[in-house]
Length: 119
Image 1: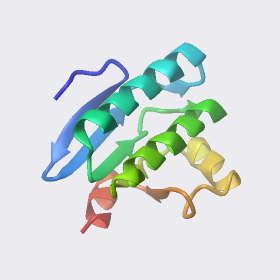
Image 2: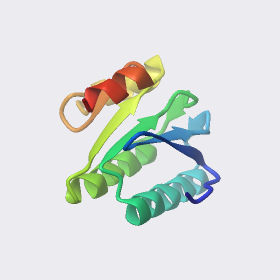
Image 3: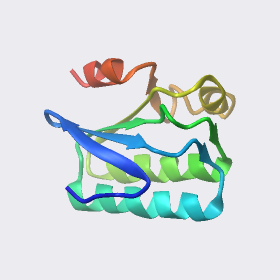
């Protein structure tokens, strides 16, 4: 698997797990690099089951949320599923306020819960 600068990738069986490294997803340059790397990951591996762990992320700007919407769309275009997990309270609140949790995104409290959600 390709090495990425903005996140780590690992597998648990057939599930691809992405651990975003940043504490803040607010700088435009960082967001663009994250978008490019996530787009590359999805395009080259076509993961049917993708877990995106945001454990390290303390702040997420609206552009970064838009990137996740685009990634979800790309994954769904070929029949895959995306689950977000390990969101810190303020990041998760952003998804709730924007009415994205439970509508556009499935969000689990822990990685273990996300992995089990695919079963």
